[in-house]
Image 1: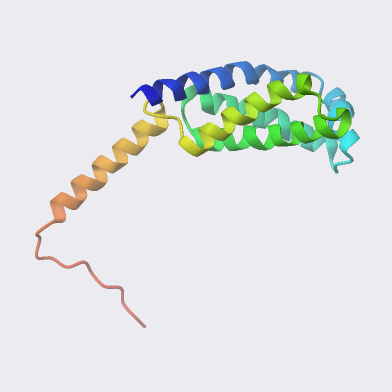
Image 2: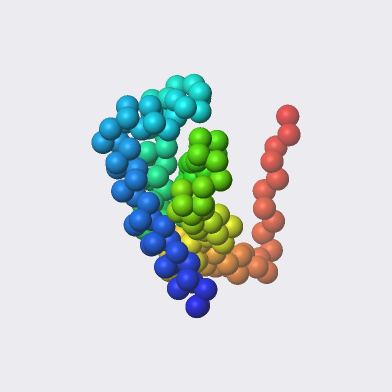
Length: 153
């Protein structure tokens, strides 16, 4: 139970603190593309800028609401990986630039590997489907009816 409180705090901190970065990117997408994507010589800088912005926004909402936590964490992890690469390739190993990126990366990695915990909607969905599956198993247990075999030919 205490682990779930920790995962809830991590989800809310990462989600609430990161979401505004995505909205800032959308406010001036050309500026973001010029400052962060084009220096890496990546193709389709505007498209990749929108991808980064929406992965931060949608990923943050996934973490905040607890729906699709692992998917949201994966989106954030991908964006933060590129951001860490950008920071190191442009500015070298500057701890002041990397510390926030590293915290977001670590938080997203933790949520990707552990899920959202018991205080997430994901957990409620899993619990519901497990109860339905267990109820179906117990209702068919001991019945003399065999499942129909598929027809061949």
